[in-house]
Each structure stands twice: as C-alpha cells, then as structure tokens.
Length: 231
Ligand SMILES: CC(C)(COP(=O)(O)OP(=O)(O)OC[C@H]1O[C@@H](n2cnc3c(N)ncnc32)[C@H](O)[C@@H]1OP(=O)(O)O)[C@@H](O)C(=O)NCCC(=O)NCCS
View 1 (cartoon, rainbow, N blue to C red):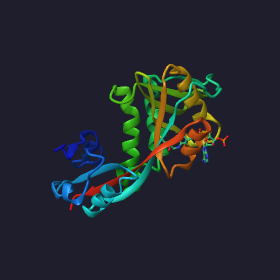
View 2 (cartoon, rainbow, N blue to C red; view 1 turned 135 degrees about the vertical axis):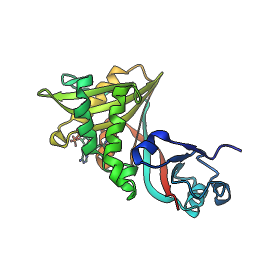
View 3 (cartoon, protein in one colour; view 1 turned 60 degrees about the vertical axis):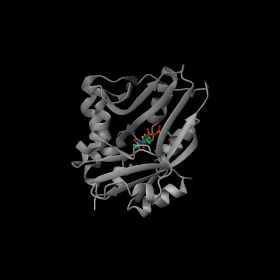
C-alpha cells in the first residue's frame, strides 16, 4: 500500500504547527483515510476535480474544501512580443523589495482562504518568494525595474524542457501597466528552448487567468485543495 501522508517541514515552520501532505491523489475513500491519525495538527490534499470519490472521502474524513487550482499550459514556440528594457535578473539587493511585493500581493492562495492559516499567509508568501535568494526555491527570478525601484518579479522553475512559473506579483502601485505581461513574455523568450510552458493559479484569480490567457495559456486541468485541522 502506498504511503498516505508525508511531513511538510517548510510549511510547518511557516504556520507554527506540524503540517502533512496527503500523498495519493486518487482512491482517497473514507476507509483509506481512516488510517490517518485523527490528532495530526494540519493536513492538506490536492485531488483532480473529477476525482469525486476522493473528494467525498476527504470531506467525510473531516477535510474542508478550500479552493480550486487551474493548471494552464502553452505548447508553442510562438512568443508574445515584449519590451525587455526594464527586465533584469534579480540581485541580492532586491530581496527586501521582492519580500514587500509578495507580502502585500497575494489574496487568492489557499493560506489566505483558510481562516485558521490566514494570519500566516502574507509572511508565508513573502518567505516563499525570497527563498530564491537562499537557493531554496526556483531556478531563476526576473524583476521589472521602474525608475530604480523593483515593481514586480517572476520566479521560475526550469527543469530541462519544462518552464514553470512558480510565483509572479506586481506592486499594486504599478498594476495594469503591462508589467506582468512583459515579465512573463521576457521569461519565455529567455527560455525559448523549452517545449512545455506551465503555470498553476487559483480559479478565483481572475486577473491571473486573464493575464495567462492573453499570453496564450489554456486551462489543462483543475484540482481541488482541501485542508483539515487537528481535532
Ligand atoms: C496578476 C498580476 C501579476 C497582474 O499584474 P499586472 O502587471 O497588473 O498585469 P498586466 O498589466 O501585465 O496585465 C496584463 C493582462 O492581464 C489581465 N489583467 C491584469 N490585471 C487584471 C485585473 N485586475 N482584472 C482583470 N484582468 C487583469 C488583463 O488581460 C491585462 O491586459 P489588459 O490590461 O490589456 O486588459 C497582479 O494582479 C498581481 O500581482 N496579483 C497578485 C499576485 C497573484 O495573484 N499572482 C498570480 C498568481 S501566482
């Protein structure tokens, strides 16, 4: 039988309690989930939206629906024209600006949407972004510089021919000026050798969905995120 859950140490440090990830993404019936200790402080699961048996099993085992995540992909070598004048590779001195933008930007993620984790969510997203500078997350980060100020960033994970956008955010002060659009387009051009381009965002995140749609991404699959806090 496959392992049912694993510890998520990074998340545990962010939310100040033990955190566990449910490993299987299918077959999560209440009977299978009865092997889950009821005193686990926090666990989360991600299952495909059409895995109705697993969704029912998780809900029947005390998990709550948090949100739906859309995986978008783009299998093309046609890239959007863009202006790269303000785009540059991040430098260590950008860390505080990136922290501040990430701290203030995210509202649709599963931590903000979970009332028990909401208090940690701003810091968690900021820590996630600046983890790049410690070499713990992502393979590249580009920033948009506007009059000497970092106005937005994109964190990437490039694995061989796979291009993934891990995080992107733009300072609200500079919203809707095309910065995210040009950051993604510049990143795609930098990694134009890749054969698959992907990003995951929340189905509720209309600005992000619109952005990726304008760049040629289409929804490939939908997953549900469920959380359970210890009883
Ligand atoms: C999503 C986000 C990165 C967009 O940044 P931005 O620089 O303001 O976006 P752009 O100006 O490049 O917009 C490009 C396109 O995206 C779409 N878009 C951007 N913001 C939008 C909004 N608030 N409502 C609807 N569509 C929006 C539009 O199609 C826009 O093109 P248009 O202005 O010609 O109509 C920004 O809103 C943000 O930082 N959000 C919080 C962080 C986040 O949720 N990141 C994505 C998940 S990882």
